[in-house]
Length: 117
Image 1: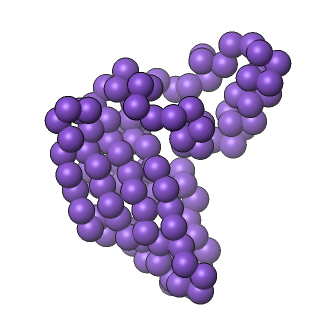
Image 2 (image 1 turned 45 degrees about the horizontal axis):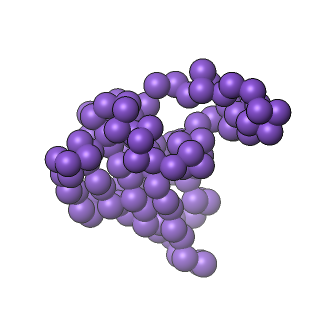
């Protein structure tokens, strides 16, 4: 079974140069989809760069077969790095990169090179 993503609201924010999306994911019979899967599908639906797409939150109510979420699609990297908190940026990476970033941060070493943008 595949997931079905429906964009319920789309707003352009010209001041920050991003598109703000609210969406609903129907996933009857399967678990809540992975954040990275959702990120790839939303970027493909909008024709945007996957690296500049950020999933801000995913909320599933107990027992429900749908998830509501919010995503931001930025036009450039500088705006993304400025407006998105560190933990949200890290949360939108693969697991091995997240672990490595937190280990490097704990040792107070440079980790900026692990971000893909």
